[in-house]
Length: 228
Image (cartoon, rainbow, N blue to C red):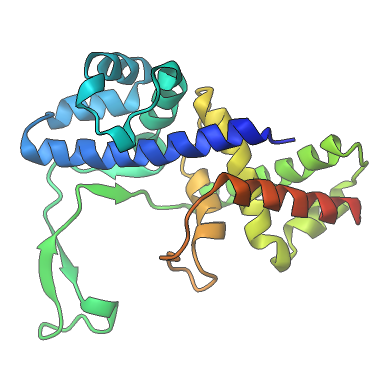
């Protein structure tokens, strides 16, 4: 079972990690941190930990973990660029259209592209995300001491009513591995889009990740598993 206290802790660390990454990216533009140094810190847990220990007081309060959480926080933060984002040294410009309704010369214009850009999700990433969902089903079945066959796992994985549930539970297990230093790569982005995006393939602006949502969906998945 996903431990409630660990899930609450890791969700808090994730929110702080994202805020720190946004702050650090802005710091590159301000010249506070060089691009090369940020990229090095963001890809090595040990370097991230060392930097945080040396610059702890410089980090904004809403992005700063408790000192006893620096190691798991560093593990989580340092995988963001590797798994979820590309940090672009010279982002250049991109074509922008309000509401994305028309990209003709009259209705669109060039704006500065973001330095922090979400990685593309490949077919292989999506296949790995599906595997992580199947692993989550098996784990929930083990937690309930409920035997489950491969055909039932496949049926649950294909159930559109469980789309968000499976993605969110698998994402919760992934977060726990991430703070221990084990990263799955962009497959986690595919999981994220399973519950934080709409079925039409666009981000849900009202979505906010909470520990309770992960725990509630785990209970829902448990019910579905026991019904097989």
